[in-house]
Image 1 (cartoon, rainbow, N blue to C red):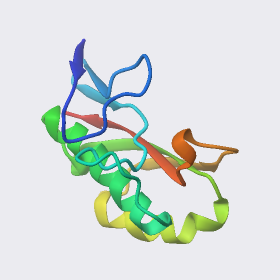
Image 2 (tube, rainbow, N blue to C red):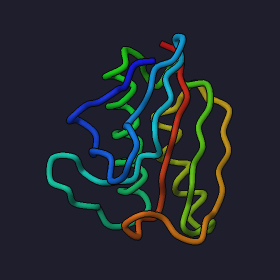
Image 3 (cartoon, helix red, strand yellow):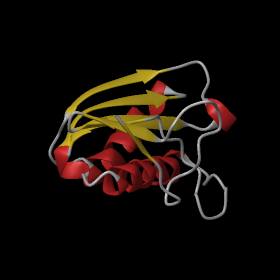
Image 4 (cartoon, helix red, strand yellow):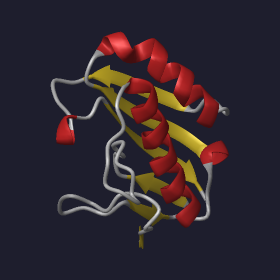
Length: 122
């Protein structure tokens, strides 16, 4: 098992890693829309989805993988009414259309509107 760590994605805010590689599979922790350079969170679901996708991409890149090698994502929304806008942004990154679950949850860390985790092959 190898821990994946990159400064191009936000650091963990708890006792976990940004990601792990196990037997050629990459598992990213859930990525919220924190800009790793500034620590800021953009306003609105479109901008937050964009930043969350970029954060997942940074972890994939650090692991030697990429969006085109993602086989499964799990997406969390603070409001299911944001589903359509979230999908528009998500579709620009995950063009290979990996398997996905997308659910609305009661609350997300730091009060963000979305979070994305991914499983990919190396």
